Length: 155
Image 1 (cartoon, rainbow, N blue to C red):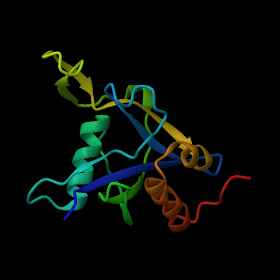
Image 2: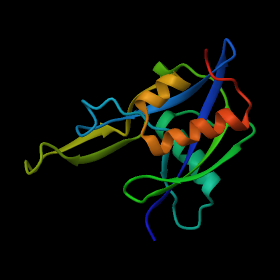
Image 3: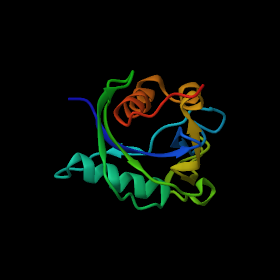
């Protein structure tokens, strides 16, 4: 069985239009890439998926996820990883988001360890912006949210 992750998609309405909170991964491999994701992470042994999603959301954003959680189902990304997600209504200042950190050898083969934020920034994106910036498999969650919540598309 491949890896399994769980995540949360915070959303808000601005002028009746859907906006979703996405995060940009930190560290040297993502520095120059403009690809954004929903906050998510691997499920720990004995942990249920929704609890894992809440924990990962808090670790990656420093925000506590509260409210009604709408199940968005699961997708598989190109690597075969299964991602299960929920959506919840919320709002925050993306500039205030603070992430946990990780350590890795950097530069490679240097013997030096460097610390990086797991998430280096966050932002709210419209349906169209999310479609342009997100991994295609994960964008499916935004499409499902739009349908489930009955939120009209822009335009």
